[in-house]
Length: 402
Ligand SMILES: *[C@@H]1O[C@H](CO)[C@@H](O)[C@H](O)[C@H]1NC(C)=O
Ligand SMILES: *[C@@H]1O[C@H](CO)[C@@H](O)[C@H](O)[C@H]1NC(C)=O
Ligand SMILES: *[C@@H]1O[C@H](CO)[C@@H](O)[C@H](O)[C@H]1NC(C)=O
Image 1 (cartoon, helix red, strand yellow):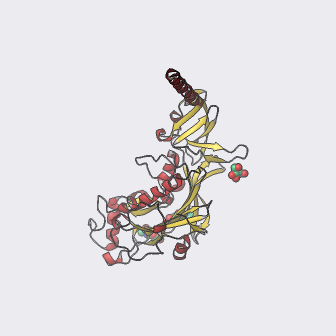
Image 2: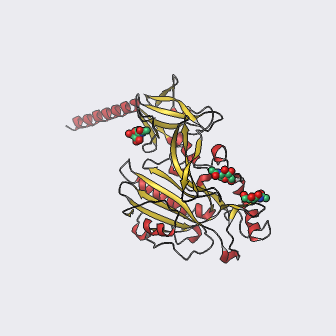
Image 3: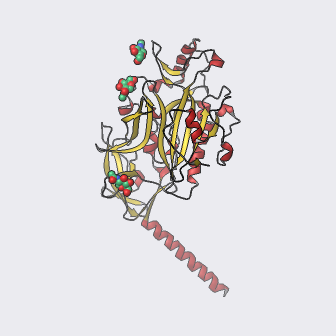
């Protein structure tokens, strides 16, 4: 009896191993964190109607059945346009057929570098703002839109950026990559790359305060400086091409480094985790991130001038430093929303709140707002903050997302 029992178990184990192997032979599973260098943008085509979407990973992997195909998008040389580089077909056993060869997907890279994002002015927003769509141009006529920005082209400050976060979001790459200031991103006519260098920040701000150019009073290493703070975070997208796309100046504002790397970063992670905890893999969140007010620092510095990272010889300022950053998260399925406001200054105590704080209703926030040196933040109802911040786009919600 005992003998038969163990024989049965052994048999079962063999069967399970066999099934597992068959699954493996028939599937292609590609770990997204192994995709490095100038890998293409992976898209799926809606059969017949000519539209595309970026492939949505499952648990950090591209998973295709044997015979299933994925479209690879690569840049066209010397243009801000991308093209269909071909289809990769899953052969099973994690191998793909591409261009007649049998390969691993991560070994198929674009011959002319990374897929190129583009910025297209598509209208107006918030009065004088430029509505700018950021995404990937496929051929001459199709824009695979990823982020919409409302941008003040006079001050070179984005009012807000908007995108749709997917439940599948994963795989944030470590390391830094270059900011894009060429092509359609490069017509600001001020040196956006160099205004964010610590030496330049120091010279510009000291000039505004009328203090000695080399003084460390306001800006100093290792952490008293403004970093290039993205509105839509790099880690809010899954693939290398999308993450690189967030490194553009339409999506960037000066953020104090301890704020950016402190509670603001935690808030971004909390929102992603909140979405990923949903069992519904089609769930998405509409996330709006924006700026409000201009930093002045009158109490500490006895000046009420607007602070900026750029000032020309006639005193014209650009890349103004926002006083606050805000985020609104809207769940389109339940039509619930929540707003967050953070004070972009870890060195001065903030006393006024722009709304009634309702953070107590949320169980998923892990930021430490007692640490004002890491950025002071609180939660608002969407209706409450809309009354205060006028450039918030028309978002209507029917309850609090918590
Ligand atoms: C194509 O089909 C998708 C999914 O059915 C739909 O969301 C999209 O709007 C369609 N696009 C066009 C151009 O008809
Ligand atoms: C934006 O401002 C720059 C100058 O900083 C100017 O050259 C450009 O034409 C402006 N773009 C639009 C669409 O107004
Ligand atoms: C400063 O900027 C203003 C507004 O764009 C421009 O009219 C002026 O010529 C600039 N001055 C210098 C010295 O660049």
